[in-house]
Length: 219
Image: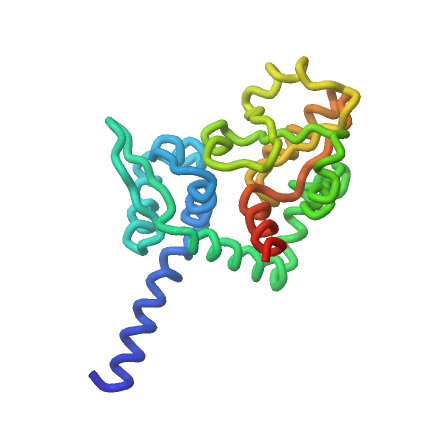
């Protein structure tokens, strides 16, 4: 093999990842799987795709070695191939936030409701998390909470939140978080809580941002 043949071959292998990530739905699937392993049916429901289309996208991710799977009875459960896939997702989002203005505009408009909702940065929450004047709730599905959650968080899935309202004290601020800065569950939870008379705010972070923060300040 000469030098040019090597270069052509190696960059062709690198582009396999780029080709796999060229689909918005595949990025969304990776984001969902970064929270916890999931069945094809669960992923289909979350992404509003047919089971057949979901399976096709998962096969592409499998071919790109970004995911793996196991069988549990009649279900096929997919999960990320390794932690570096989460790092890759962080890099993609970070570059997009810095280079593409529309990303931040869309997030501020839809997730932050154009600054109409109280939003707390992760560092600010870390500085006050021991003072006891708030309750932190995780509004993701319980399977994701069980896979990993922020210290002290209560699991109150968004689709069950009405059943928990009567148990939340109104003399403390309720801080809601979900899958991260682009997840709408926390926004919906805060809007609901405020409409019921609670003092509520959205935490602008999720489990991965928290883990990254912990790693950064533990060294």
